[in-house]
Length: 293
Image 1: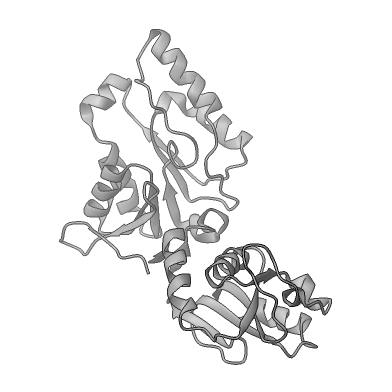
Image 2: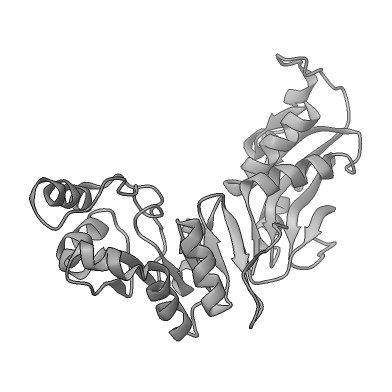
């Protein structure tokens, strides 16, 4: 699994900027993810950020100066940029929209294979499977992923979960009304959580209210919070689920120690949202962080 974080994207844009032609006077992003890359490249180069609509209408905004010392340019190239290219369908459609312009070139930060008929510039070839921090929760990768709940889909519970009294009442309020963090727009293979099984109805209610679709909800079988703390098997249980689901290609975990344990026990990729780093293993070896591409 090749994973690119937002932090790595910015580093790659800075590196690519030094290699791109000097006569780029403006950059336009392909909505939506391409706009993220285009905006940062425009800032790095201190050039105009324009829209595809501007280009389609024949406008030339870069002929006027902007604030912060963005100079007017009378001539030069406009780069239309997408974050990734796979089949080339998106950029091909954009090229058709802008067919009447002769001052536009096309590029992608990451591409599966070089397609010279589609793009003029590309930063790095990136093989499949691959995923990106900025759109992971809006991609079909989650259909083959186990996803932690507290700390990933919703805000984590920071208090002590008691088995009775005020502490339990506070925790129950969290289960029922936790603040959403990352709500997937594709169905997930499984939500795998350390919440106790007795909170299944409230947990399903929260997931449904927030539109989270899932095939499976895996919860802790311990009867009480104190029994779960005594067992200390949070990571082991998640690894057991992940290891048995050969069709799963990713686990998303919020806790760094648990992420490392899951990766070590399964020798499979785990994305830790605390730092947004992919942790991977080689069978029979200790878990090692995979370098972001």
